[in-house]
Length: 174
Image (tube, rainbow, N blue to C red; front, top):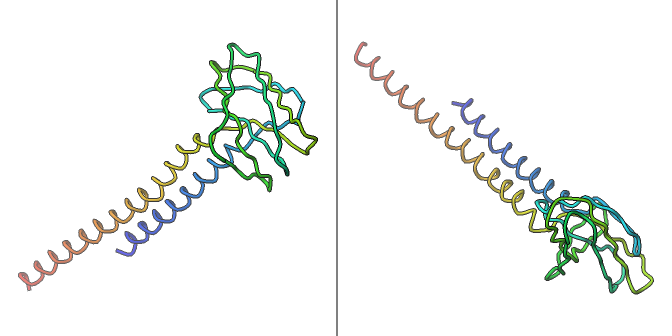
């Protein structure tokens, strides 16, 4: 019976670890992987399935303008509604624009600021793209420990029923 409950405990620990791993990987996948300075033109591979977005890191408020060109079709940029941020290695990135590309390909991006500021731009994934990883993490947090608990309960019932049957046989035979 201790083995059954030990297995339930292992399932609980595995669920918590998978939850933490899912959350951390979701957040790290959002942060910009390709960064560039104001006025710099970069070529970035864009896949619409990854829900790409442009992020801004700046110590001061800046007015910015971004342009996209190239690729297999005309991509469009749409401003982000609200204030959505992600922190990576101490840098606070604010999602400013989502990229609506018609097809996978290499696109030219240029973002500029009107002020002289220490601003960096980056291409990452849209914050809503993390929903799948977070949902999977939450599912792991509840389903795996729940399965372990169910195994523990079923194992306990089976052991108790067998012991009861064994005692009855001993009482009749003895």
